[in-house]
Length: 113
Image: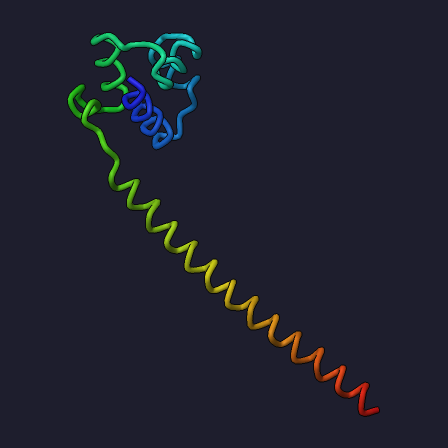
């Protein structure tokens, strides 16, 4: 049930809905819906159909839903952020080298003065 709850949470987030929004649409309390998302409560077939209809899919689609597109989006975003981080790291190293060079120049000019 936890996997199904995670799928429902993901679908809810994709729609930009709060737990309160979905609970109202399902005519249940917010805590009851929260228990569905966390997998604490088992979902009966009629509730499963109601949730599937809410997200405009069949029960089978809801049960087999796997958001590989979303996973790929996160992987791509992670790769982009990682590359930017590596670029920044290179910049920091280059700046550190320049600071050391300038310090050495200052030190050398004070010794000869």
